Image 1 (cartoon, rainbow, N blue to C red):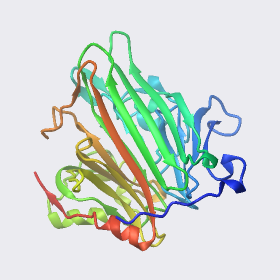
Image 2: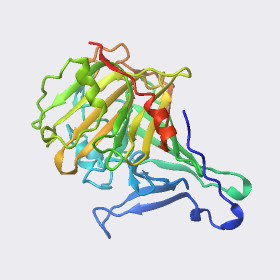
Image 3: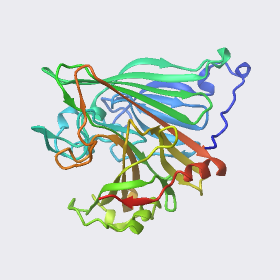
Image 4: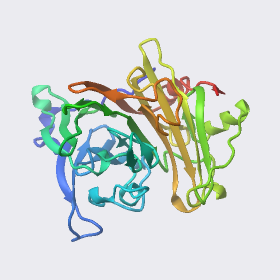
Amino acid sequence: MSQDTPIAFDANKFEFIHQVGGIRTATFDWPDAGGAPGCRVAMVDTGSGLRFTVALDRGGDIVEAFYGSHSLAYLTPNGYRPPRQPLHRDEDWLAAWPGGLLTSCGPRYMGPGREEDGLKLALHGQHSNTPAALLELKNPDPGRGDLDMRLGLVIRDTQMYGPVVEVRRRIACRLGEPVIRLRDEVANLGNSTVAHNWLYHVNLGYPLLDSGSQLVYGGRVNGGWQMNADMSMADLSRSDSDLQGYLTVPEPLPEHAACGSRGLILDIGGDSEGLAHCGVANRRLDLAVELCYPVRQLPRLANWQHYAPGGSYVSALEPFSGSLWGKDQDHHPLAAQWLEPGQTRLYEVEIRVHTGSTAIDGLLEERKPLSWDL
């Protein structure tokens, strides 16, 4: 696939790294100027036109993301509401969720609230409501030929008597390149086996996501849903031809008001190097975003589509390992995932921004047919 050419910088023409890029930390007020408590953030400028904000108090997830003047991510009306650990009931997660480019779900359970393994579970787990400890902040030093920048974080899901699950996260970029490299090590530090489900909720929004934008993925679909505004489930078409319509973004749909939405779950294949590719392309903006990751780490993909009138307009690409519905209802052979004491799982995802017809055409070549496998 054709890649965008990195931007070069002449270190003899600037003295302070933040003139051209780098990472800064700050605290955002909530709900407005002067509000408290705030939310710790790290603001990352790659110097390539790609800049984004990491919510340190919300699991080190990525919220706002821009390329040039164009937003890439969907944002909810909640803003940077501080983490709300007591609200892990039913759908309470939605009341604190800021949306954003990447939300991590897990590390033990994810998906809708339900009962599983004798536990009453809330939507999407605790990760995004858990503050991260900042272990490392490294800025580039072009004068020494060092263009790398990165954040090192640790997020712990713990309680007395266990479980003790730790996520060590690294977010890395290179000055002049529109690429985010995320690496998570999820470890069971306790003394008992724990369930493990892990999902990256990549929420694409306007203006990148617009009517006529093309979603990029393909494979054998083994699950899906269509939800009415009152959260009841509607029958899902089993026509292979109807599936192809999921890949073109429509204008807002009246039936997606309130909780109305639709989605697919599929097994996504990898290329000759074992890498999965998915994303979205907007030819009107000459802009595309690609996710690239080892399919052995994240063998399943969900695509949530919520094209509601009034601004709630989003499509999420969600690579995952484990089950969204829970292993009691999900008969996929990879639905039940566990971490033994001392065991670690590694996850790596690249988020790449593409411009220019050659790079966008290359991404669209990864768009494969969809077919039902039920």
